Length: 355
Image 1: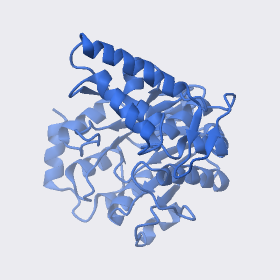
Image 2 (image 1 turned 60 degrees about the horizontal axis):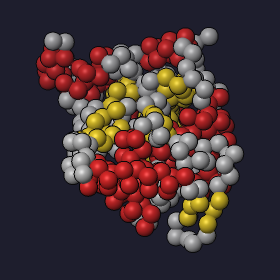
Image 3 (image 1 turned 90 degrees about the horizontal axis):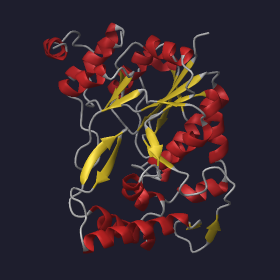
């Protein structure tokens, strides 16, 4: 049987026209929206109200903090409790489908993978470990994190090269380390490995030590993943994710980390899922600060060629040409295109994308 879908959208106060476009593009499938509690949310248009449910109680969410990560888990928990779905897809308002949703249903129904995400093991190679150790092995703003950041600089040298891999930026040294620099880089690797193997962690704002049991899933620091938050997973995987995350030890391991969502969600998936597949998202390249650049015709063409089902990051402008083109590719109803209908700019962009 075709899979029953459930969409979860993490909103932070975007224009309701943006949310309406996304919800309409996902019709007729149910959409559960978590709205950042620190921002005012005007009501959505009644035409889509029956398709939407809200996460209650909503949490205040920041960028990459525990509030955002825990809100994702809360949203998954509510979806599991209230909806009989087979497959859940997490989205943001800056995401849009770039293919009909029926294509995603066929992909999920016929495929063998039980979850789809761009992620990789933290210990897959030395450059990966040294790129992310300062985030994965120390609480935010701690002396331990400062040390790990310094060790990262020793290892990569000045102005390291950034390579986008699976929706993450991995560092590489531009030139081979020689002499004293080589000794410093080797020392950085050894010290980072020693810090990673230490299973004693400090919670935020406290001096209490928490000992993590080695037999617990995902408790050993090397047994961790890093990657994109925007995943899709079957119901059984979502159930295991929520069960694992309910552990107080698990929370103690992750809650104080920097950009914890990019560690927590991929790690949960690593241990909850059995057969991973590539992400359903095509994410645009990152800028120098690690944020995805907004979609332009070149990036949209690249996203279409990827064969994936969603793209991000679209401009938060309802009549943006790339946004309207994506909606048309997804086969959306005419009202999703807004009051301006077929805009000349949109037609021009489509012509450019086809060549």
